[in-house]
Length: 480
Image 1: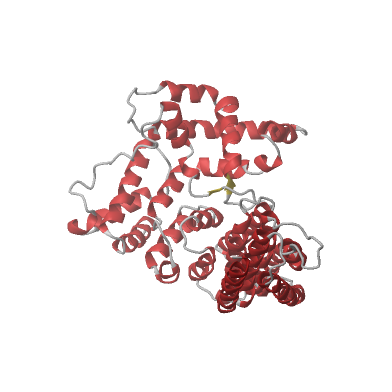
Image 2: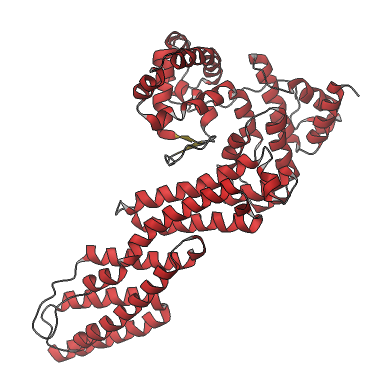
């Protein structure tokens, strides 16, 4: 069998496994790419394979050969806005809102896209961009996609030429870094160029991937495996970029683990590490590193602080399930990344939970019967205490992936003892008629009930809540 015949045979087997709608989508994408002049591998083989399918199985539409125009991007906006959105469309699946501590190939910080795009259209390909702007059809519903694709195709060689000139200058990269807005932006530049060079392939990949990828798809979908293998092995898209695109659609990041094992046809971590699909594990680990960054930023922002627990749960979930899937820690460079992420997360969490006993004492310290005053009930201080206690509970659940076992056990014991002492004092004060600021005292009791519920459980909190109501009623009767 000739090489072309072998390729067509393989593609035919793949296309037969797809639904009619998926076959139609792929065919339209290939035909549109051919009409634009884009170089997409295996276009002719795909069309030939579909041509060999039975007529009823080819596509769902009555006219499978006709090219269907893409849906308008950001319809209703001005031409400039639509052109910008269409120009950046290939990046949609791999951009992230967080700047990762270490550059991960395949994931581009959203904050870096705008300055790089501005540099391209203003400093590198200005004439080409002005031509694209001048192509405004005057129709507010017109699709800017075709014009954006032509611009990207024209801009790529200009960008590559500029980079070669920059690298020839000893200080060129430093100057470009400053011009773009710093190292965190400049480090994303090569990934941006990689995508621009393969914009058609990225758009096709996005069209072929399922909208949502759950456990069933990651572990049992022949269609997903076929799509990914075609992208990596035939279209030659780096598996890191494919993994990043998949990550935007998976129910949980760790699902990249079992999917990579299926693609590499092994359960051995070391064999997986030597395959081209190892880059997908790198993407999953980068999500754990992203959780560390999220925890750091949320701890520093009181408005976001209660979301720290969710990021810690996600961090634990990724590492735990990757360890269940295969012996990931037997691969040295993955073991090193996991260890660094655990260390950084442990430092952040440990600092917050260690302060919990002291925060509880300060939050619940109100007027005493002896005549000295501890002050009123401060809501802000109580919020600090509640955050520390909640985070302590989350840390206990994630302790397998934190280096905090001794601290967690010790702090938990101190928190329990602190609450037991304060419970006695607060409820004794509540039942007495000697308290001056009863509003502050009741607020402190309510706070104590809430913290007890977090530490000892809601059954115990319900008992305290009943005592609280009895104490308030008794004091009210006495004052009445």
